[in-house]
Length: 327
Image 1 (cartoon, rainbow, N blue to C red):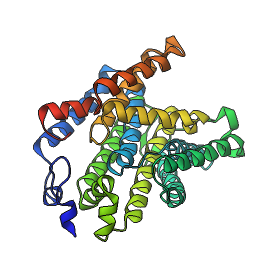
Image 2 (image 1 turned 90 degrees about the vertical axis):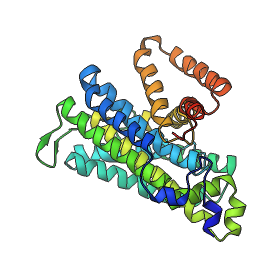
Image 3 (image 1 turned 60 degrees about the horizontal axis):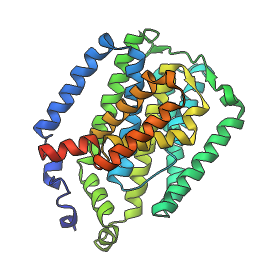
Image 4 (image 1 turned 120 degrees about the horizontal axis):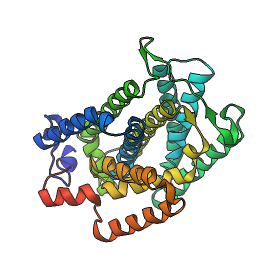
């Protein structure tokens, strides 16, 4: 039965998946850590924290799309829903930041379980439309619910004291907490991808009927990856709410689901590090081209068209093909 997933498209076997990290992946992680340590002293810390939050969001979405083969148009529900819960827990319930973030993440996991259990009964475009429909339900709930603040959102969310010891009012201090959350989430995603569970996911993505014929209960695997993806998206949303001290309707709007798809495709769907590059590109454009107003969306669309035409595997996917190593 295990022979069906003995190797994946990148040539990584189950036995290799259980072993150590390839040297080039370890080098990339070290480079990310080094860049993360110096980034707040070279760039505006809040901007870099935004990049890290959206990079984690994109990596979580890529786990579902790139490795599970499931296209969701409703991931803003978990990102924004967790942001609202985290903000409410910190401001109204007086939770410290670590518990507020955990509350939002747990809420995203519960929401992902409920939606995923229904959505995985459909495939292809029907699956995508079901996730979009549920995300719109979450959006209208966020608009009408009394605790969300309606169109104003939840503002002035306190950052608080981490573990009662570390004051997060300093941007630099909070930055290193966000960096730790991002790296922890990324390592978790990496471990999921390069585990026997991840190999089964790839087998289901490539040929689900064959995986079923070999005895795998594919719906269980799809639900598991859906919940994991929603949980990690919720972790990103909860962290963003603490960073910006705000949870708003923008976080649950359908356009947020579109943005994370764009980030994943530009960076490289089905690559470990591609969504990070995609998130950095999109967030940088939004930040530095903000004075151009609606033209930012037009430029994003042009870049997307160029990537589809010239870099169909995404930026990192093309680089991986050039160096002939999975990234």
